[in-house]
Image (cartoon, rainbow over all chains, first blue to last red):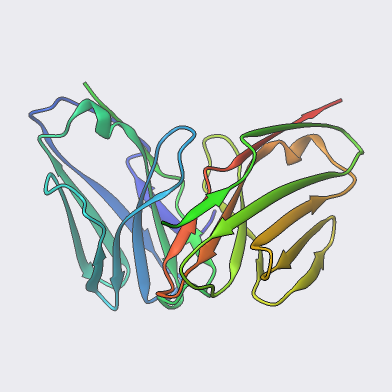
Length: 114
Length: 109
């Protein structure tokens, strides 16, 4: 148990579907992150929220839409995805946004786009 | 551009010692992290170095040389459960984490 919970663990969706990934943390952290992890590639930072405000959006396609309704919850809304979007999507949180703070990761959602 | 390099895969024997290297080229430096990730699981924090030198934490140690842009993770008395991927990440001048692709460590009996 890492303190960060992601659902679902696995998701298969068609290119015309709309789905959402959910992340929840009860560690009292102020910053939350979405990462994409593809095989044999570095973790790609997608979005950063600090105190519920989006502070970074690293050129992510608009078919990925984040939402942070409060400091404990983070969503990633997905629509009209492409097969190359298949990957492990990891949520993480940290006490503060600075890169000196240890990040706690969820176990990820394994996404397959067919 | 910013770059983190670490070997793709390493193999070691149970009970032995292994050193996983990480070299980096980043715009600024605010610390280097090592994470462990077992297959199908979340990455978990191992160490953080911001000053030069060796930090020891049980069987695991992490070393940093800022002038050389170099770090290593040293694992002693290897156990089968140490089979995992080890991720190196550097915090740059904007406090953004730049990640390496990870080193898959295979432990053989």
